[in-house]
Length: 92
Image (cartoon, rainbow, N blue to C red):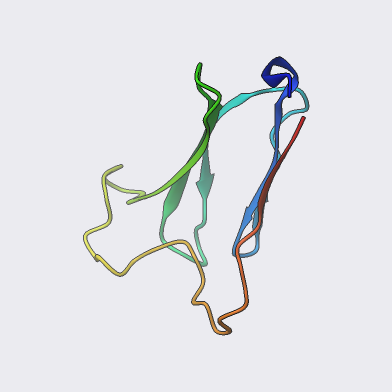
């Protein structure tokens, strides 16, 4: 596989889909979930020099920019059926 041709594809969590611009292998963006959920989600995707592809999603308090005070606050919906999986993909 030629990793120089890898580009990030869409990632979906809950009812939100983040679609990176075509042809990029690094992404950093913030998704504002308000008013439905009082959170900002930092979304990072990148391919490192060793070929490791990483997606990182972090909940942030929209007022402080730090971690939410409530440890149960989060951006993922409850998993109501054990077979349901969150979608994430990449294309090359």
